[in-house]
Image (cartoon, rainbow, N blue to C red):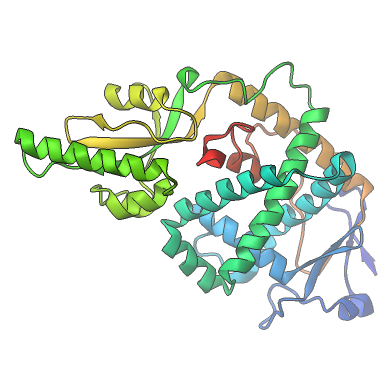
Length: 345
Protein backbone atom coordinates (compact mmCIF):
# COMPACT_ATOMS: atom_id res chain seq x y z
CA UNK A 1 0.00 0.00 0.00
CA UNK A 2 1.34 3.41 -0.94
CA UNK A 3 1.63 6.02 1.79
CA UNK A 4 1.48 9.77 1.36
CA UNK A 5 1.50 12.93 3.41
CA UNK A 6 -1.11 15.61 2.73
CA UNK A 7 -1.57 19.02 4.31
CA UNK A 8 -2.42 18.69 7.99
CA UNK A 9 -2.72 14.89 8.01
CA UNK A 10 0.95 14.29 8.96
CA UNK A 11 1.21 10.93 7.28
CA UNK A 12 -2.19 9.64 8.40
CA UNK A 13 -3.60 9.69 4.87
CA UNK A 14 -3.10 6.48 2.93
CA UNK A 15 -3.67 6.22 -0.80
CA UNK A 16 -5.58 3.08 -1.72
CA UNK A 17 -3.89 0.97 -4.32
CA UNK A 18 -3.19 -2.51 -5.65
CA UNK A 19 -5.14 -5.48 -4.32
CA UNK A 20 -6.73 -3.49 -1.46
CA UNK A 21 -8.14 -1.02 -3.96
CA UNK A 22 -9.50 -3.80 -6.14
CA UNK A 23 -11.04 -5.52 -3.12
CA UNK A 24 -12.89 -2.33 -2.12
CA UNK A 25 -14.05 -1.71 -5.66
CA UNK A 26 -12.47 1.74 -5.78
CA UNK A 27 -12.59 3.54 -9.12
CA UNK A 28 -10.79 6.75 -10.02
CA UNK A 29 -13.04 9.81 -10.55
CA UNK A 30 -11.72 10.03 -14.11
CA UNK A 31 -12.81 6.51 -15.00
CA UNK A 32 -15.35 6.28 -17.78
CA UNK A 33 -17.78 4.21 -15.73
CA UNK A 34 -17.96 4.70 -11.98
CA UNK A 35 -20.39 2.47 -10.04
CA UNK A 36 -22.23 4.18 -7.23
CA UNK A 37 -20.98 1.74 -4.60
CA UNK A 38 -17.33 2.28 -5.53
CA UNK A 39 -15.35 3.28 -2.41
CA UNK A 40 -13.38 6.51 -2.66
CA UNK A 41 -12.31 6.84 0.97
CA UNK A 42 -12.19 4.93 4.24
CA UNK A 43 -12.30 7.05 7.40
CA UNK A 44 -11.54 5.02 10.51
CA UNK A 45 -13.15 1.94 8.89
CA UNK A 46 -16.19 3.86 7.62
CA UNK A 47 -16.49 3.96 3.85
CA UNK A 48 -17.35 6.90 1.60
CA UNK A 49 -18.67 5.91 -1.82
CA UNK A 50 -19.24 7.59 -5.15
CA UNK A 51 -22.93 7.70 -4.23
CA UNK A 52 -22.11 9.64 -1.05
CA UNK A 53 -20.09 12.16 -3.05
CA UNK A 54 -22.95 12.63 -5.51
CA UNK A 55 -25.22 13.76 -2.66
CA UNK A 56 -22.59 16.26 -1.56
CA UNK A 57 -22.14 17.36 -5.17
CA UNK A 58 -25.82 18.33 -5.35
CA UNK A 59 -25.34 20.65 -2.36
CA UNK A 60 -22.32 22.22 -4.05
CA UNK A 61 -24.21 22.77 -7.29
CA UNK A 62 -27.01 24.46 -5.41
CA UNK A 63 -24.96 26.72 -3.18
CA UNK A 64 -22.03 27.75 -5.35
CA UNK A 65 -21.60 29.21 -8.80
CA UNK A 66 -18.12 27.68 -8.71
CA UNK A 67 -19.72 24.31 -9.49
CA UNK A 68 -20.92 25.45 -12.90
CA UNK A 69 -19.05 23.79 -15.73
CA UNK A 70 -17.39 21.17 -13.53
CA UNK A 71 -17.52 17.58 -14.68
CA UNK A 72 -18.83 14.79 -12.46
CA UNK A 73 -15.28 13.75 -11.62
CA UNK A 74 -14.24 17.30 -10.77
CA UNK A 75 -17.29 17.76 -8.54
CA UNK A 76 -16.54 14.52 -6.70
CA UNK A 77 -12.94 15.52 -6.08
CA UNK A 78 -14.13 18.92 -4.89
CA UNK A 79 -16.59 17.57 -2.29
CA UNK A 80 -14.46 14.74 -0.95
CA UNK A 81 -13.00 17.00 1.74
CA UNK A 82 -16.49 17.93 2.99
CA UNK A 83 -17.49 14.26 3.14
CA UNK A 84 -14.34 13.19 5.03
CA UNK A 85 -14.46 16.08 7.48
CA UNK A 86 -18.16 15.39 8.05
CA UNK A 87 -17.36 11.79 9.00
CA UNK A 88 -14.62 12.93 11.38
CA UNK A 89 -16.59 15.69 13.10
CA UNK A 90 -19.90 13.85 13.38
CA UNK A 91 -18.22 10.74 14.78
CA UNK A 92 -16.44 12.85 17.40
CA UNK A 93 -19.62 14.79 18.25
CA UNK A 94 -21.68 11.62 18.66
CA UNK A 95 -19.19 10.38 21.24
CA UNK A 96 -19.53 13.67 23.11
CA UNK A 97 -23.32 13.98 23.12
CA UNK A 98 -25.06 10.77 22.06
CA UNK A 99 -28.74 11.06 21.08
CA UNK A 100 -30.34 14.00 19.25
CA UNK A 101 -33.83 15.27 20.15
CA UNK A 102 -36.24 14.40 17.32
CA UNK A 103 -37.73 17.90 17.31
CA UNK A 104 -34.27 19.40 16.79
CA UNK A 105 -33.66 17.17 13.77
CA UNK A 106 -37.08 17.95 12.31
CA UNK A 107 -36.49 21.70 12.65
CA UNK A 108 -33.14 21.51 10.91
CA UNK A 109 -34.51 19.25 8.19
CA UNK A 110 -37.19 21.84 7.40
CA UNK A 111 -34.62 24.63 7.39
CA UNK A 112 -32.21 22.78 5.11
CA UNK A 113 -34.89 21.49 2.74
CA UNK A 114 -36.47 24.89 2.27
CA UNK A 115 -33.04 26.42 1.72
CA UNK A 116 -32.32 23.86 -1.01
CA UNK A 117 -35.64 24.65 -2.66
CA UNK A 118 -34.83 28.37 -2.63
CA UNK A 119 -31.32 27.82 -3.98
CA UNK A 120 -32.71 25.66 -6.78
CA UNK A 121 -35.36 28.27 -7.65
CA UNK A 122 -38.37 26.40 -6.26
CA UNK A 123 -39.52 22.84 -5.45
CA UNK A 124 -39.94 21.77 -9.07
CA UNK A 125 -36.48 22.99 -10.00
CA UNK A 126 -34.96 21.08 -7.10
CA UNK A 127 -36.59 17.98 -8.54
CA UNK A 128 -34.91 18.77 -11.86
CA UNK A 129 -31.51 19.11 -10.19
CA UNK A 130 -31.95 15.77 -8.45
CA UNK A 131 -33.11 14.08 -11.63
CA UNK A 132 -30.04 15.35 -13.49
CA UNK A 133 -27.88 13.92 -10.71
CA UNK A 134 -29.67 10.56 -10.81
CA UNK A 135 -30.86 10.93 -7.22
CA UNK A 136 -34.42 10.21 -6.10
CA UNK A 137 -36.15 12.95 -4.13
CA UNK A 138 -36.91 10.73 -1.14
CA UNK A 139 -33.34 9.41 -1.02
CA UNK A 140 -32.03 12.97 -0.99
CA UNK A 141 -34.49 13.95 1.74
CA UNK A 142 -33.31 11.04 3.89
CA UNK A 143 -29.72 12.14 3.33
CA UNK A 144 -30.58 15.72 4.29
CA UNK A 145 -32.25 14.42 7.44
CA UNK A 146 -29.14 12.46 8.36
CA UNK A 147 -26.99 15.54 7.74
CA UNK A 148 -29.37 17.62 9.86
CA UNK A 149 -28.88 15.20 12.74
CA UNK A 150 -25.12 15.30 12.31
CA UNK A 151 -25.04 19.09 12.10
CA UNK A 152 -26.98 19.40 15.35
CA UNK A 153 -24.52 17.12 17.15
CA UNK A 154 -21.52 18.92 15.70
CA UNK A 155 -22.78 22.41 16.51
CA UNK A 156 -23.69 21.44 20.08
CA UNK A 157 -20.35 19.70 20.66
CA UNK A 158 -18.40 22.62 19.21
CA UNK A 159 -20.36 24.97 21.43
CA UNK A 160 -19.24 23.02 24.50
CA UNK A 161 -15.57 23.34 23.56
CA UNK A 162 -15.61 26.84 22.04
CA UNK A 163 -14.96 29.84 24.25
CA UNK A 164 -18.23 31.61 23.45
CA UNK A 165 -17.71 34.28 26.07
CA UNK A 166 -21.43 34.76 26.63
CA UNK A 167 -22.22 35.25 22.95
CA UNK A 168 -25.30 33.39 21.81
CA UNK A 169 -27.11 33.44 18.49
CA UNK A 170 -30.30 32.85 20.44
CA UNK A 171 -30.01 36.16 22.29
CA UNK A 172 -30.06 38.45 19.27
CA UNK A 173 -33.12 40.30 18.09
CA UNK A 174 -34.18 41.35 14.63
CA UNK A 175 -34.19 44.95 15.82
CA UNK A 176 -30.39 44.69 16.24
CA UNK A 177 -29.83 43.59 12.65
CA UNK A 178 -27.23 45.33 10.51
CA UNK A 179 -28.27 43.43 7.41
CA UNK A 180 -31.33 41.41 6.40
CA UNK A 181 -31.87 38.72 3.80
CA UNK A 182 -35.47 39.19 2.79
CA UNK A 183 -38.08 37.44 0.65
CA UNK A 184 -41.38 38.99 -0.32
CA UNK A 185 -44.72 38.26 -1.90
CA UNK A 186 -45.71 41.28 -3.93
CA UNK A 187 -49.29 42.21 -4.78
CA UNK A 188 -49.66 44.87 -7.45
CA UNK A 189 -52.86 46.96 -7.62
CA UNK A 190 -54.69 46.68 -10.95
CA UNK A 191 -54.69 50.43 -11.44
CA UNK A 192 -54.35 53.61 -9.39
CA UNK A 193 -57.89 53.87 -8.06
CA UNK A 194 -58.72 53.55 -4.39
CA UNK A 195 -60.77 50.46 -5.23
CA UNK A 196 -57.80 48.82 -6.95
CA UNK A 197 -55.62 49.42 -3.89
CA UNK A 198 -58.31 48.08 -1.57
CA UNK A 199 -58.57 44.88 -3.61
CA UNK A 200 -54.79 44.48 -3.62
CA UNK A 201 -54.69 44.85 0.15
CA UNK A 202 -57.46 42.28 0.55
CA UNK A 203 -55.49 39.85 -1.59
CA UNK A 204 -52.31 40.45 0.44
CA UNK A 205 -54.23 39.81 3.66
CA UNK A 206 -55.63 36.53 2.28
CA UNK A 207 -52.12 35.42 1.41
CA UNK A 208 -51.00 36.34 4.92
CA UNK A 209 -53.78 34.18 6.40
CA UNK A 210 -52.73 31.25 4.19
CA UNK A 211 -49.20 31.58 5.56
CA UNK A 212 -50.48 31.60 9.13
CA UNK A 213 -52.20 28.25 8.65
CA UNK A 214 -49.09 26.57 7.27
CA UNK A 215 -48.56 27.38 3.58
CA UNK A 216 -44.76 27.54 3.05
CA UNK A 217 -43.60 31.03 2.14
CA UNK A 218 -41.62 29.92 -0.92
CA UNK A 219 -44.64 28.05 -2.26
CA UNK A 220 -46.92 31.03 -1.62
CA UNK A 221 -44.51 33.30 -3.47
CA UNK A 222 -44.47 31.00 -6.46
CA UNK A 223 -48.27 30.81 -6.47
CA UNK A 224 -49.29 34.36 -5.71
CA UNK A 225 -46.52 36.93 -6.08
CA UNK A 226 -46.77 39.49 -8.87
CA UNK A 227 -42.99 39.92 -8.85
CA UNK A 228 -42.08 37.72 -11.80
CA UNK A 229 -38.36 38.24 -11.19
CA UNK A 230 -38.39 36.57 -7.75
CA UNK A 231 -41.48 34.38 -7.48
CA UNK A 232 -39.79 31.21 -8.76
CA UNK A 233 -36.96 31.72 -6.26
CA UNK A 234 -39.33 31.77 -3.31
CA UNK A 235 -39.62 35.55 -3.45
CA UNK A 236 -36.04 36.09 -2.32
CA UNK A 237 -34.78 39.65 -2.79
CA UNK A 238 -31.30 39.20 -1.30
CA UNK A 239 -29.28 40.98 1.38
CA UNK A 240 -29.91 44.61 2.35
CA UNK A 241 -28.64 47.13 4.83
CA UNK A 242 -31.05 49.64 6.35
CA UNK A 243 -29.93 52.22 3.82
CA UNK A 244 -30.54 49.92 0.85
CA UNK A 245 -34.13 48.89 1.63
CA UNK A 246 -37.16 51.16 1.52
CA UNK A 247 -37.82 52.43 5.09
CA UNK A 248 -41.35 50.99 5.24
CA UNK A 249 -40.07 47.56 4.20
CA UNK A 250 -37.11 47.61 6.61
CA UNK A 251 -39.34 48.61 9.51
CA UNK A 252 -41.90 45.92 8.69
CA UNK A 253 -39.17 43.28 8.43
CA UNK A 254 -37.45 44.03 11.74
CA UNK A 255 -40.84 44.32 13.47
CA UNK A 256 -41.92 40.85 12.32
CA UNK A 257 -41.82 37.80 14.56
CA UNK A 258 -38.77 35.65 13.87
CA UNK A 259 -39.74 32.74 11.65
CA UNK A 260 -43.07 34.27 10.59
CA UNK A 261 -44.22 36.48 7.73
CA UNK A 262 -44.72 40.18 8.32
CA UNK A 263 -48.04 41.95 8.14
CA UNK A 264 -48.95 43.30 4.71
CA UNK A 265 -47.08 46.56 4.17
CA UNK A 266 -47.69 49.22 1.55
CA UNK A 267 -44.95 50.67 -0.64
CA UNK A 268 -45.08 53.06 -3.57
CA UNK A 269 -45.48 50.03 -5.88
CA UNK A 270 -48.11 48.01 -4.04
CA UNK A 271 -48.35 45.63 -1.09
CA UNK A 272 -45.71 43.29 0.29
CA UNK A 273 -45.71 40.37 2.69
CA UNK A 274 -42.12 39.96 3.90
CA UNK A 275 -40.14 37.09 5.36
CA UNK A 276 -36.73 37.51 6.97
CA UNK A 277 -34.66 34.57 5.75
CA UNK A 278 -31.56 35.58 7.65
CA UNK A 279 -30.03 38.52 9.42
CA UNK A 280 -26.69 39.63 10.78
CA UNK A 281 -25.85 41.28 14.07
CA UNK A 282 -22.43 41.87 15.69
CA UNK A 283 -23.20 39.24 18.36
CA UNK A 284 -24.14 36.68 15.70
CA UNK A 285 -20.90 37.24 13.84
CA UNK A 286 -18.84 36.69 16.98
CA UNK A 287 -20.82 33.55 17.80
CA UNK A 288 -20.34 31.96 14.37
CA UNK A 289 -16.67 32.95 14.16
CA UNK A 290 -15.93 31.26 17.48
CA UNK A 291 -17.76 28.11 16.38
CA UNK A 292 -15.82 28.08 13.12
CA UNK A 293 -12.48 28.50 14.88
CA UNK A 294 -13.32 25.57 17.16
CA UNK A 295 -14.42 23.52 14.13
CA UNK A 296 -11.05 24.04 12.47
CA UNK A 297 -9.19 23.28 15.71
CA UNK A 298 -11.04 19.99 16.21
CA UNK A 299 -10.65 19.00 12.55
CA UNK A 300 -6.91 19.59 12.74
CA UNK A 301 -6.71 17.23 15.71
CA UNK A 302 -9.05 14.63 14.21
CA UNK A 303 -7.25 14.54 10.89
CA UNK A 304 -3.98 14.07 12.73
CA UNK A 305 -5.30 11.23 14.90
CA UNK A 306 -7.42 9.38 12.33
CA UNK A 307 -6.53 7.02 9.52
CA UNK A 308 -7.94 8.28 6.23
CA UNK A 309 -7.48 6.15 3.10
CA UNK A 310 -8.13 7.74 -0.28
CA UNK A 311 -8.59 6.28 -3.74
CA UNK A 312 -6.19 7.33 -6.51
CA UNK A 313 -7.06 10.75 -7.92
CA UNK A 314 -8.51 12.09 -4.66
CA UNK A 315 -6.90 14.46 -2.18
CA UNK A 316 -7.98 16.45 0.86
CA UNK A 317 -7.74 20.23 0.91
CA UNK A 318 -5.50 21.39 3.75
CA UNK A 319 -7.06 23.21 6.67
CA UNK A 320 -6.37 26.95 6.88
CA UNK A 321 -3.26 27.92 8.80
CA UNK A 322 -5.22 30.78 10.37
CA UNK A 323 -8.66 29.78 11.58
CA UNK A 324 -11.19 30.88 8.99
CA UNK A 325 -14.07 33.11 9.99
CA UNK A 326 -16.35 32.00 7.15
CA UNK A 327 -18.89 29.49 8.52
CA UNK A 328 -19.05 26.08 6.93
CA UNK A 329 -22.06 25.13 4.80
CA UNK A 330 -24.10 23.51 7.56
CA UNK A 331 -23.44 26.46 9.86
CA UNK A 332 -24.78 28.70 7.12
CA UNK A 333 -27.89 26.55 6.88
CA UNK A 334 -28.39 26.93 10.62
CA UNK A 335 -27.21 30.53 10.87
CA UNK A 336 -28.52 32.15 13.97
CA UNK A 337 -29.29 28.90 15.79
CA UNK A 338 -30.93 27.87 17.93
CA UNK A 339 -33.55 30.47 17.00
CA UNK A 340 -32.83 30.66 13.28
CA UNK A 341 -35.59 32.12 11.19
CA UNK A 342 -35.14 29.52 8.49
CA UNK A 343 -35.70 26.56 10.79
CA UNK A 344 -38.95 28.08 12.07
CA UNK A 345 -40.53 28.60 8.67
